[in-house]
Image 1 (cartoon, helix red, strand yellow):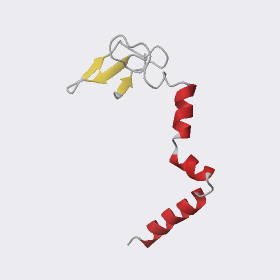
Image 2 (tube, helix red, strand yellow):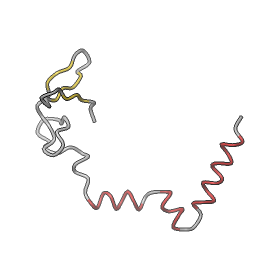
Image 3 (cartoon, rainbow, N blue to C red):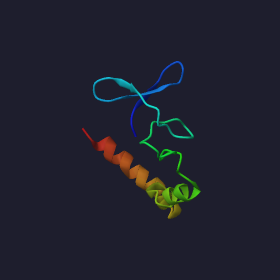
Length: 84
């Protein structure tokens, strides 16, 4: 992902290390700058299956599923309270 800027006319500019340069290869959906010819950015290509996989791999959800999330978070809070 490249930081980018929009002007008042919504033209997209990227910093090339020396100056802001007009960038015309944009995501078809959100207008984020893209490498030439990619069409849609990685964010806009995220679909339901990607969301489900991320949900299934989320550690907090796993801990909650087994009923130990509250104990885990209490332990983390205890560690932080004991720090100098």
